[in-house]
Length: 319
Ligand SMILES: [Zn+2]
Image (cartoon, rainbow, N blue to C red; front, top):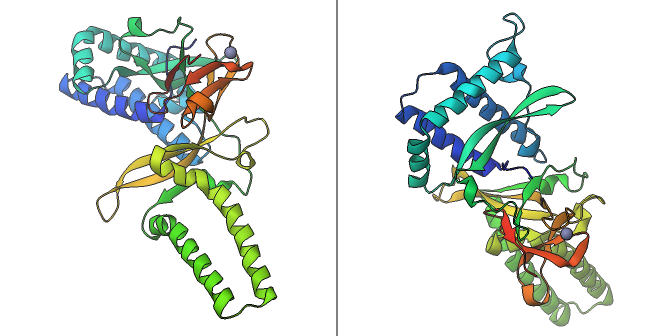
């Protein structure tokens, strides 16, 4: 099992901390820092490119991340040298770095990783735990989730993949359930007292049907206000996807009232079952797990059941 995580929120945090630590340690090495910066900027622009892009596919060839180009010759060699220098710097300052991270309440660090795709090397950022001995990756009771990259969404899903709430959109979202309720009460009163015509009643009924339909679409988005994550209906997903979630993200931007701007995003969490290796998807818990989201293994739906914490992305066997 891979011992790193690729989660943009952790990567952002770990990146800002390593930058602060490099500053603090007065490390003067342009090239390795440049490699790190380029990788970070590339990763950020990769996920900004489209709402369905995941950080797990933010992988870049040496030519895109080093200063050296075709003229100077060896991007692959330089990228590898800069990566090694970066890792040596971390190892040299291991104790101070660990203390620094812990004083910031973080137990993970940023790392530069490589992988081979069709025999070509690619670089990417990931975070790893600073205390690997504490990690129970061999333990069959523990599971780690990651966010999948979404395939190109269907056209009717596109506007819902990423919803940013600021200004009037925020108020529309908050006030529309009350407005619709008042509209229906007023409409029914109007029918009873003022215009009791059958045609009017049919119109009223079709509005009820329409708004019931909208209610089923909008419900998961409203659930994220309470729980910050909810399961979406299957019509938003592709057939190959067993389950999807909408998740509330707090952006770094503040609105005019000083609150962080919120954004609801479609994400799909998955994991590999630590017991049988089957794929694990997220579902609403039933019976004793009612009110919780849980991870279920496709190969053993009722037995390989795990808790799901979307903040830590960890879980443990529940049965
Ligand atoms: Zn399983």
